[in-house]
Image (cartoon, rainbow, N blue to C red; front, side, top):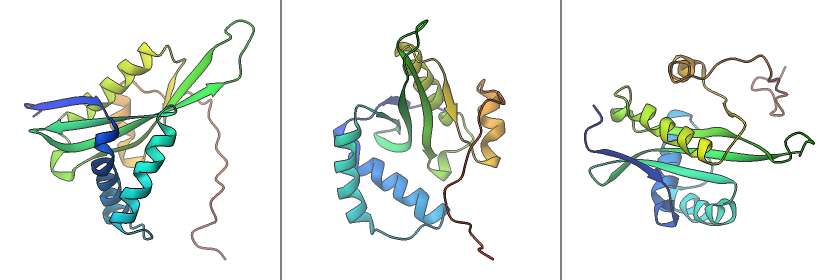
Length: 160
C-alpha cells in the first residue's frame, strides 16, 4: 500500500536521516560494527557535501517520516568518437524500513531513480543486488546482460 508516500531527491537537510537509515541497515541487518551512530551521521554529512555531484540520493517518505532511501552513483565513462559523452550509473544502498517492505514503495523509489537517469541521458543503470532481491529487480525491468565481471578485492571471510 503506497498511500501517503512520496519519493523525492534527497537534499542536505536529509543527511542525518539518510545516515540513520543506512546505519540501522548496516548494523542491524548486515552486522557491521565500527562507528557509533552520532559519529557516522557527522561523517556522512561531510561525505554528502563532497559527493553531491556523483551520488544522487533519493528518499521515500510516508506521512512526513523518511522510510527508505536509494542512491544513484554516477559514472563518467571515457569519451568515444561516436558518442563523446558517455555516462552510466549504479543503483546503490537501496533500503526500506522493514515494516514498509513488499508493498510497492521500493518500486516507486526505483522508478523515480530510473526517471532521473533518463533525464540525465545515461547509457545504462546497473545494480549489484543481493541474491534475495534479484526477482524484485527483474520485475522492474533489469536484465542480466552477461557483460559484467567482478574482481572482489575484499579479503576472504574464512581465510584458510
